[in-house]
Length: 183
Length: 292
Image 1 (spheres, rainbow over the protein chains, first blue to last red):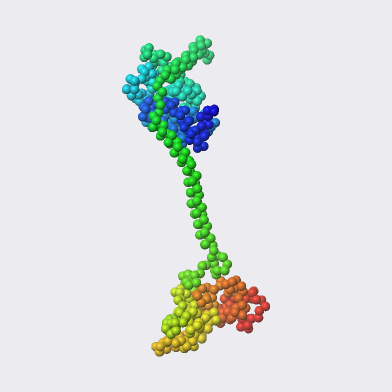
Image 2: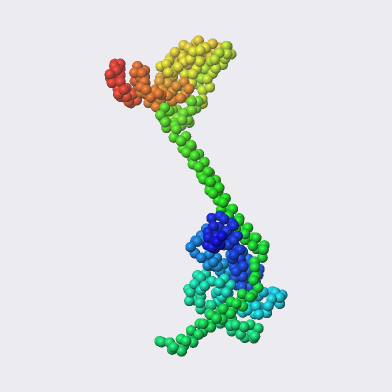
């Protein structure tokens, strides 16, 4: 039996099929959670934002049009939810990388995981929010530039530029940390 | 400004470089621990989704409830409006609900005003009060004597005085009736036949006899001026030329009424009635008094 697409499943759920939602949730729970976790860095905040994002998706099901790609729609809702959260925390201006860096993983976890991965995560956390958002949408969610542009509400060139800056910055940070991290 | 081919080459190389670097980062990133949401969080989200689904299913019931409430309200409103319109139907005088036992205050006051305007006579009022007391005594005596069905009719407080006389049982099974052409002049004679009066009532009787013509005249004027009143104090008909069923009155009765109006010197009313009579019975002969 052929696997149903995300769009079909979402439409089916909007029509009242709970089973369709369970399949859809199972498909996207991991990537969406990690996307939010990388942005928030703090697991507790990430859990709240993750739950809030799915609640918004559930509530917006009747407005979903099956002609639109589901992943772009889902990440857009999650992106807006996370950005709203940080705007509420810092109403005066943008969230700075330092704000994000405060939400580092627990020290115990750091010791338990591989140092190289920790370095990479730390480097990602140090990126400016827009660059980090774009990079995670690319490497975690696997979205193309056009979809990233739609999700973040910018044009394609801006999204591409952010991604390039993010990569160059990571290269710079990880290159200065010695042979542990190779790019 | 044109770009140097060398610069273009180096920029293209840089472009390829960052894309390559991105691939390396992506490979390193995929080696990271795959964090998953906690199971409790999964359950909470799925429960939320189920709840929303159930709420959606309940929505039509709420709509039906609201619709039913609105329907009941509209139905009630329709019934109330229909009841308000019912008295306007033909067959009821003046389009007003008239309680047989108690005419409205407004009708009563207007009737009193009319009566007062016609005969503002102290003697008449005194006579009325005397008669009232006599009648009360008579009815009480009648009750004592034989317990016949001549129970005192409970005259409504708002009923016109004329109606009181109409319902007075003079003797067992015999009643005065205004409908029978104001036979109040016979009342003094009838008073003699009432049993149960004591001597102290003799003065009242004589006064009543003296005032009888006045009462008769007043009652006649009142009946002519106002709408006719039946024995229960009801207003009989909206117009003089038609009875309750809407049919034309008997011409002879009508002529009697016209004569009464003439006698009462209500010439305006007489003119109107006469015109209506002529319209209804153009060929019916009129008495000489009315032809003038």
